[in-house]
Image 1 (cartoon, helix red, strand yellow):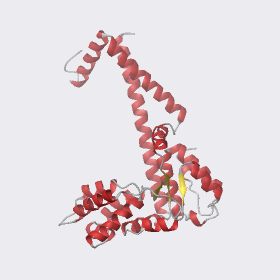
Image 2 (tube, helix red, strand yellow):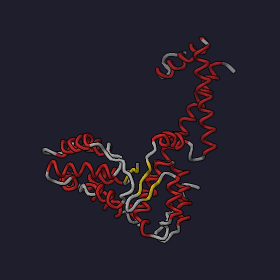
Image 3 (cartoon, chains in turn brown, red):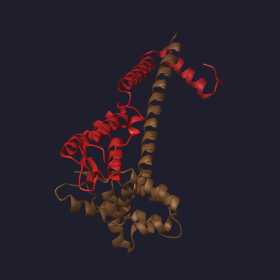
Image 4 (cartoon, rainbow over the protein chains, first blue to last red):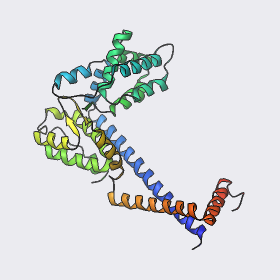
Length: 159
Length: 142
């Protein structure tokens, strides 16, 4: 076998391997998305209620009160302020900066963190994050940017 | 275990061992992170907190998998060492042995290619030639 053939065979095998891993990753993401859709269709109201409670800034206190003996992972005050300011920047003014909004929401890893930020937001800017998001976004944008994002993060991360 | 079987979701009336068995299927198909999230969503949607499945057996088993069921909140237990391990572990969930075999082939082929290119100047020249031919879409022949 010539060296050129060897190179072609090695490259071919590497390419096949990479293709296989990409396929598997896509398949898993697809299955995850399918399950999200099925669960939401059959009664995802519990999750959407939790999202609403979090966006009203009440969820973290609810969780702490109903689980007094468990430790939660919570955001630092500076991080809470930073994300809240980013959200305010995205929602203030004439239009909505959707990429800034998505980036701010993506930095929140659980609903407790969302709630902490929403609590700060309400106290700092006088309106709830839930109301401001609903006012600024169309129903379909709200579903795509807010619900879809927040439904796929956990309620809480226990310390 | 299959992509179809994980779609048979447990209900509020399901027993604890049915939830556990479904979760195990889920985990071996989707990996830890996605499985934990789907478990939490389904548990919520079926109000698992207020069901016969909310037993100490289920809570203990799930804790062992890193899922803590609290009161009206379900989430993952944060363990950074285990999170790093699970990141790599997630790569080897679906079709474990096929995946390991493919990973082996990938490592051997890429490794073999790199060794040949690194230590043999003739191979290096040929690799550059092939690369040039591909990059120029055949205009420059190796």
